Image (cartoon, rainbow, N blue to C red; front, side):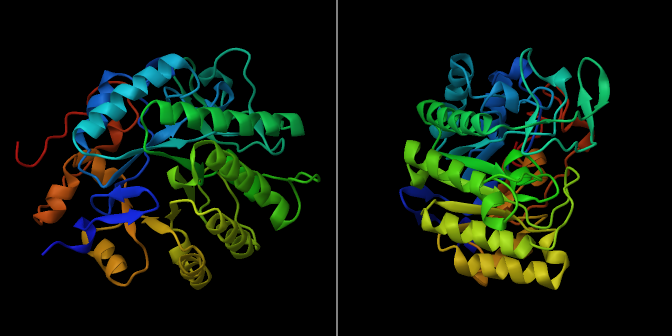
Length: 359
C-alpha cells in the first residue's frame, strides 16, 4: 500500500503523481543569469518529485540581487528554461518556476548596468551578501518605488509568467516569503509608505494580491502558487504584532482567486502557540492545496498528511543530496546528507554529482 506521500493528488487542471515537492532552493549555477546544461541535468535528476519548484528566478533585471541567479526576462533565458522543462517532462515530472524579485536584498555588484535596487521604502536590510567581483559586501539602501515603478514591476511579473508558460512550465510560484520584495510590502518595518500601498493591513497586502491576480489573468489561476513565511525573520525581517491579521487577510483573498496552491514555510510559526494557531487558520481558510515546508522528515510529513493538516510537503536540502528522494521514501532508505559548502558554488560539485541510491 502506498504511503500518503506517494499518493496522487489533483487540483484545478494540475495532477501531481505524488505529494513530495522539491522546494525552491537558490543554487547559483546560472552563469550570466542564463539557465544552462548543468541546470538541465540537475532538475531532470529530480523529476520523480510530484512537483519541482525551481530556485528563485528574476522577472526583470532589477530583480537580480544575488550572484548567478537565473532570469526569465529575455529570449535567451526562455530558450534555456525550455530545455529544462522538456527534460523534466520527458521523465514524467511537473515543474513550476518560482518568480523572485529580491527587492532590497541586493548589491549593485550582482546586477547589470542601468538597474535600480527597488523596495517599498528606502529601508536597508543591512545584510552581508556575496558578490563574485568584490567578495562579501553589504546590501545597499534601496530606492522607494514610485507608483509608476510599482505598476512596472507588476508588468514584469506578468511578462515573466507568460515567458515561463511559453518555455513549458506547468505553472508559476510567486515568492512572497523570506524577506524578498513581495514580503517587503507586507511587513510594516520594511514598508513605511503612507500611500495606498502602505499603512493598514489591507494596503500592505495590496501589491501581493494585485500581482497574483494580474498574473492569474495572464496565464490562468490554475497555474498559480504563492509562497509565504509568517513569523520568519530571514533577511532581517522584524516581527510585528499584526502578523496573524496580515496573513489571514492575504490567505482569505488568495483563496477567492482559486489559485492552485499556497506554499507555507512553517518552521518559525510553529515555535509559538499564536503561530501554530495561524497555521491552523490558514488551513481552514484556504480551500485549495496547501504545501508545508520546514525541515520535515518522512515521519513528520506522513503524520501531517494523515491528519489532513496539509496536502503536500516540500523538502529542500534533502533533495540536494537525494535526487531520488521519492524512491528512498518509498523503500525506507536512509537519506544522504548534503554538503553546505557546495550549496552556492558555480560548478557541478555538490550539484549533479549526488548519486541515486541504486547506482
